[in-house]
Structure formats: structure tokens, C-alpha cells
Image 1 (tube, rainbow, N blue to C red):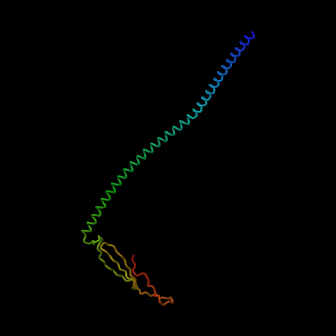
Image 2: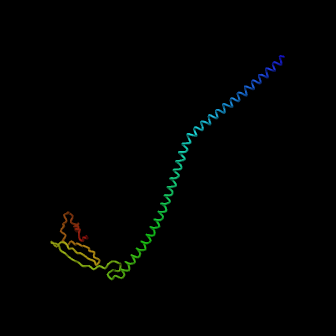
Image 3: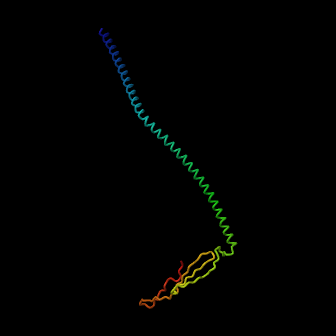
Length: 184
């Protein structure tokens, strides 16, 4: 009987060990599940906090994208306006060039027909001289008038040169005084 008792005790011990093992495994499994639930809850809380930040970033991105589209539309409109203005400027330039050519042709034709115009296209000059002598008789004022109505004043100094050389070297000649012809 001793043997039977030992077999019964061994079986009971095995059952107890198996029960403890099953209990520990179940408990570890529940702990593991609880840890996972806690971790999932924390992740959801963090996600909720980040959700507001994400929504703010998405809103900001949408606003920036809308501003970019608006700026692009404005730039396209300005580019179209610039193209339109460039085309108008080209047209005005072409018209101005044509009118300038017509104007120059009319002036050339008028110069060809006008007997008072010289060969180089400049008015022929008819010189009338008027001489006036100031009180000491020192200068002569001559005024030339062209047919075009422009006048040129010429003043000539006719006073004798009275400067003397005061240098001891007699080989140097005195320099003449400036001021001969004077134009206004």
C-alpha cells in the first residue's frame, strides 16, 4: 500500500501543479491583456490630443493651398494684363513709328519744295550786319540774323594790346591778351 499512496500523492501533486500552471498562465494572459488595454487607451488619449493638432495643421495646409491658388490666379491675371499691355504698347509703337515716318517724309517733301531751304535741309541764311560802337570805341557788336529768325551775337575787341613784359629775359615775347571773339 505504500506504493498506492505514493502514486495517489504523485497524481494529486501533478494535478495541483497543473492547476497552478494553468492559473498562472491565465493570470499572465490577463495581465498581458490588461497591459495591452492600458497601452491602447494611452495611445487613444495621445491620438485625441494630436487630433486637434492634426486638424489645425490640415486647416492651415488648406488655407495655404487656397492662398497659393489665389496668388496663382492673380499672377495669371497679371500675366494676361502684362501681355495685353505689351501688345498694346507694340501697337502704339508701330503707329508712332509710322506717324514719325510720315512726319519726316512731310518735312523732307516740304524742304524739297521750299526755295528758301539750302541743299542740306537747313534754312538758307541771309546775313544782315548791324554794328554798334560803344562809347570808347573799344568793341564792335555784330548781330547776324537768319531768315529763320535766329540771331547770333558776336563781340569783337578792337582795343590795342598794352601789356608789357616785366621779366628780365628779353627773349620771351609777351603773350597776347585773350577775348578776341565772344559769343553769347
